[in-house]
Length: 382
Ligand SMILES: O=C(O)CCC(=O)C(=O)O
Ligand SMILES: [Fe+2]
Image (cartoon, rainbow, N blue to C red):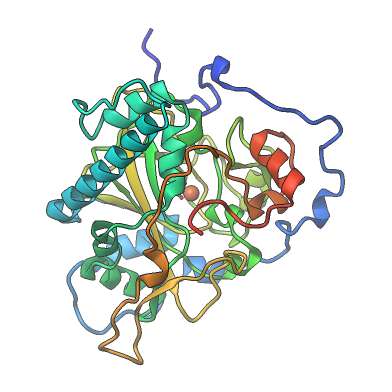
């Protein structure tokens, strides 16, 4: 029978791929003292449409889309991005995958370079030959010109102005996600994005544009969101960590009560066609489905916020101002985001400070690393 993504939890990935490393007696007992827990609630910031720009500009949301973003916490926009800009991103990724293949081949970690495979296949072949190849790519955090152009494109910034005001910055957490078929490391369980950030982010609207580089479908692992889960303005309990990954996971018992939502009834599957995007806020609960297709579900998630507020990334990295009302001729300075990078092919660990803010209910190689090294610095995007 064909596997489908309807109604299954992302945990139903082939059990043989899951290798839990349990440390005895490590379940946290002083949970409520952890920094993730707070009584804070900022419903207005996430529910109220701010004053709108007086001018009409390309790329702005329609009144209906704007209303949906603040009312439901997300909005799916079809046919928005320029295909040439997306194709430039695909070309830049092809170069990154080629570099990875060259390096893995040189290090004798793969048998061949799989050059004959295209954008939607090649990394999956590398992953089969060298498990962890897509984690290496995710960790790289390289920002080629095509990504910079997309992130700062006029239409998207005009849209952001409607949501967060005219002083706009790119948020330091952004991702290129190579979701190869049937892969736990790229299948993200239910979470609020604030679950990964420090509590400074709880009172700041940080919209994400989730941009697939193909038609994202239920079968190839698109996102699901829980509509209205931002309404209370709260960050609910998460636990750490999911399966063999570095992901935190929403506590499915307690959190829906705190957020006033139902993970089944309020669930929306968001299939996004190429050229479209899913826009959501940093409180709305979401996850990504398992990729049950035979192609790679590539996507970029880019975030913004006002540069007048804290970024909530543990002061490890700050945002990148993109527009300033005080300086109409302002030019973006990408230098901090534009360091030349080489793959770290020997370290697949992604420990991060989010692991210190929630109960560790399940240990694996990443949480072990946090305990061993007391790591407070994420090992990607630094
Ligand atoms: O792309 C995915 O699989 C997960 C995306 C996500 O959680 C995000 O963009 O915040
Ligand atoms: Fe997310």
